[in-house]
Length: 343
Image 1 (tube, helix red, strand yellow):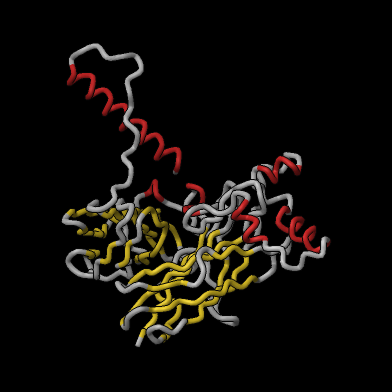
Image 2 (cartoon, one colour):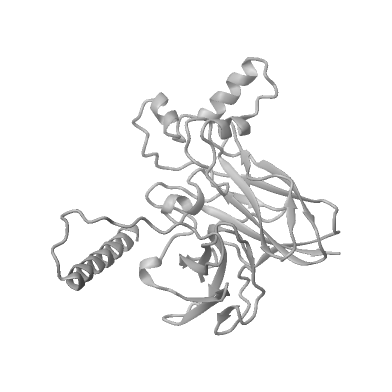
């Protein structure tokens, strides 16, 4: 799928270049200057839906996974479901976000579709800063993905629970996973229980351990070794989370990352999915380490404090060390939606 998209992009670039030469009618330098991608605007830019792909869910039905891109560097935008934030036909509400933070956000919701959906199309229309964008959502064959396994690496998304004995979730969000109540100004406890299996195929298997660690490979048990060494020194308060941040840990957005230090096995991030009033999370990306025990269930605890009453929806995102968007592979991460009624 990536090769197909790269080929399309290269073809489009060639067409644009040919048109530019034809219009100019003049001999051009052998190496023309190519403009760099436009940076994010500060404010006033549009929002864009981002189709991650589609594929089968565990029950055999299909779903279209969708994210978004907010081109505004310093502008968070709230657009309620309605004329300016709608999915048609059958909508306008398909559990899409109404709260859009700056930057690219992957797979924030999924739309289940019936088995006979065929060549039908949905359209997500967004109007922000007076600019309208519309993206079609369909079962486009080149965008088929496996939500639950990257076949090239054997990677799978983290498995999470929102209560200690609750159902396990993995992959795209499927409706609202949990409903809570909260009071304005009082912290609401939030806990995610997470675990993750390593890749069944390790492309760095032949590398020596020191090089694997420097490149952030999973196979050297670097996280467990660092933690064990710290305990051997008697340092019971060794903070592997802080160490990961100091030595090249997580990517922006809590996607894990591949620095030279110990990398988290799972990173849990909470985001506002719906709700226009500010919500304060006590912790940013929460980095979890299984210390070599891939069956370990790790807890990520934080709180959310709401500044105004109303209906909110939060999104818990769990990434393994493939990072946001799965490092471009569209697998493997897990999202869950939590509705909160705030009084």
